[in-house]
Length: 486
Ligand SMILES: *[C@@H]1O[C@H](CO)[C@@H](O)[C@H](O)[C@H]1NC(C)=O
Ligand SMILES: *[C@@H]1O[C@H](CO)[C@@H](O)[C@H](O)[C@H]1NC(C)=O
Ligand SMILES: *[C@@H]1O[C@H](CO)[C@@H](O)[C@H](O)[C@H]1NC(C)=O
Ligand SMILES: *[C@@H]1O[C@H](CO)[C@@H](O)[C@H](O)[C@H]1NC(C)=O
Ligand SMILES: *[C@@H]1O[C@H](CO)[C@@H](O)[C@H](O)[C@H]1NC(C)=O
Ligand SMILES: *[C@@H]1O[C@H](CO)[C@@H](O)[C@H](O)[C@H]1NC(C)=O
Ligand SMILES: *[C@@H]1O[C@H](CO)[C@@H](O)[C@H](O)[C@H]1NC(C)=O
Ligand SMILES: *[C@@H]1O[C@H](CO)[C@@H](O)[C@H](O)[C@H]1NC(C)=O
Ligand SMILES: *[C@@H]1O[C@H](CO)[C@@H](O)[C@H](O)[C@H]1NC(C)=O
Ligand SMILES: *[C@@H]1O[C@H](CO)[C@@H](O)[C@H](O)[C@H]1NC(C)=O
Image 1 (cartoon, helix red, strand yellow):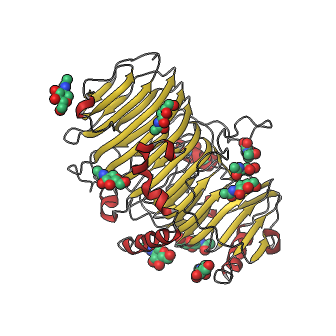
Image 2 (cartoon, helix red, strand yellow):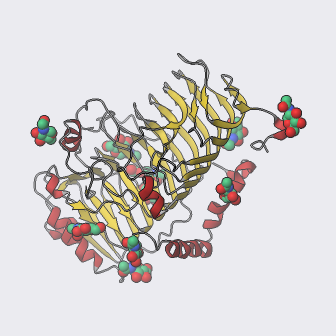
Image 3 (cartoon, helix red, strand yellow):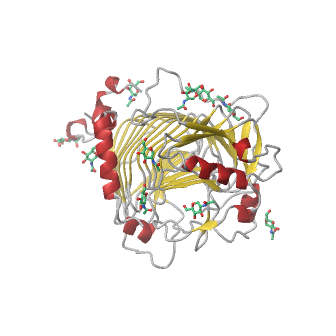
C-alpha cells in the first residue's frame, strides 16, 4: 500500500511512519514500559483429521511482492547472533518419536548464557522434532530449516499449567490455570522465530477431541504465546494444528508477524490464526491462514478483569492477509476487548467461504472501547455476512461481571469492499444504550446477495456513500455535512 497515493490515510498512519525513526521508536518503547506498571468459547461442528500439507502447493500467498509497502519498518533487527547451535548438540533426535523436551530446554538454557554476549541462534535441522513445551529467551533466534518440523507432544502433561492471564481472570475456556503454550516467552526482548519455511505442528487433535467430548479440564494451550515481550519477529514459517489460538502476543509491543502460512482443519475449535491481545505496535502482513476460527482477531481482555488491567490493543496494521474459516471471520475485533482497542488498520484482505469478512464483536459487560478502526480494500467470495458488527455469545468469566459496563464502539471506517455470492446483507447491530457510532461506509459493492438483501441495522449511527445494495436508513448520506468524507 502506498500511503502517498492515499492522502486520506496519512493522518491514520502518521504514527506508523514516525515509528520508523529510531529515536522516536526508542522513546515510545520506553514510554510503553513505563505505562506498563499495573499489570500484574463457542459451539462447533465435528473435526476432520489434522491438517497435513498437500503434496502439491495450492495455497501460497498471493501477496509478498516487493512493491508492497511493509509495516515492519520499526522492527530493530540488530546484528547476527554471536553463538549458533543446533538442537542436535543438546541430544536432540529428529525421528518423530523421541521426546526432545529436555533437549530444547537445555538448548535454551545454554542460549540464555549468550543473552548479554551478542545473543544466540538455535537451528533446527530437517527432521521431525517431537517436544513438550519450552520457553524462549531474550536476544534469541529459533531457526527452522527447510524440512524441519517441531511436533507438539500429544501428552497434556507436557503442556504444564500456568497462571491465567490477569486480563482474563481465569482460563478462557475453563476456570483456574491454563495449559502453557508449546513455545512460550515471558518478559523477553529481541526474539525471532524464523526459518526456511520449517513448520511448527501442534498436533492439536487430542485437544480438539477433549473439547468436543467435554472432558477438557483446563484451557487449551496456544501454539506460540509471547507475554510482556518486545521487539519480536515471527516470519517465513508454517504453523499447523494449534490446540487453541495459533499465535498469541499478549502484553507485547513492537512485534512483526509476516510471511506465514497458518493451517488447521476448517472445523477445529478455536484455532484462531493470529491474536494480538493487549498489545501495541503490531505489524501483521503477507500471511495465508485457514483455520477453524478467526484468521486474525484483535483482543484486549475479558470483562471486569480486562477493565481492571486496562491494557489496550492499539497501533496495529493487518495487511495482505488471505484465507478461509467457515464459521468465523477474516478479521475479528473482540469479543474480548475490555482493555480497549484503537488505531487499527486492515488493508488488503481476501476472504472466501467464511462466515464474515470483517466482524466487530462485543457484549454488555465488556466495558472498554473500539475506536479509530479503518478497514479497506477487502475482497470476498461466498461469505455469509460480509460485514458484521454485533454482539457475540454473551459469555462472561464469572458472576462478577458488570451489566452496566457497556462497550463504546465508534469511528469505524470501511471502504473499497467487493463481494461475490454473499448470503446476506451486512448486519450492524449495536447495543441498547450503547449505539455503535461514527460508522462510515464508502465504495462498497456487494453485488447480488443470495438470500437477505435487506441490511439489518439497530442501535447504530453513521453514513454511507456509494454502497450497494442500498443500506439501512440509519446510515445517512449527506455530503455537505459529512464527517467521514474528506
Ligand atoms: C483517533 O486517532 C487519532 C490519531 O491516530 C487521534 O488524534 C484521535 O483523537 C483519535 N480519535 C478518537 C475518537 O479516539
Ligand atoms: C510452506 O509450507 C507450507 C506447508 O507445507 C506450504 O503450504 C507453503 O506453500 C510453503 N510456502 C512456501 C513459500 O513455500
Ligand atoms: C540483549 O542484548 C542487549 C544488547 O544488544 C543487551 O543490552 C541486553 O541486556 C541483552 N539482554 C539480555 C537478557 O541479556
Ligand atoms: C516457562 O516460563 C513459565 C513462566 O512464563 C514458567 O512457569 C515455566 O516454568 C517455564 N518453563 C520452563 C521449562 O522453564
Ligand atoms: C515484564 O517484563 C519486564 C522485563 O522485560 C519485567 O521487568 C517486568 O516485571 C515484567 N512485568 C510483568 C508484569 O511480568
Ligand atoms: C516467505 O517465506 C518463504 C519461506 O516460507 C520464502 O521462501 C520467501 O522468500 C519469503 N518471502 C519473502 C518476501 O520474504
Ligand atoms: C475424549 O477425548 C480424549 C482425547 O482423544 C480421550 O482420551 C477420551 O477418552 C475421550 N473421552 C470420552 C468420554 O470420549
Ligand atoms: C524470509 O526469507 C527470505 C528468503 O530467504 C529472506 O530474503 C527474508 O529476509 C526473510 N524475511 C524475514 C522477515 O525473515
Ligand atoms: C479504493 O479503490 C480506489 C480504486 O481502486 C483507489 O483509487 C483508492 O485509493 C482506494 N482507497 C483506499 C483507501 O485504498
Ligand atoms: C445536509 O446537511 C446540510 C448541512 O448540515 C443541511 O443544511 C442539509 O439540510 C442536509 N440535507 C439533507 C437532505 O438532509
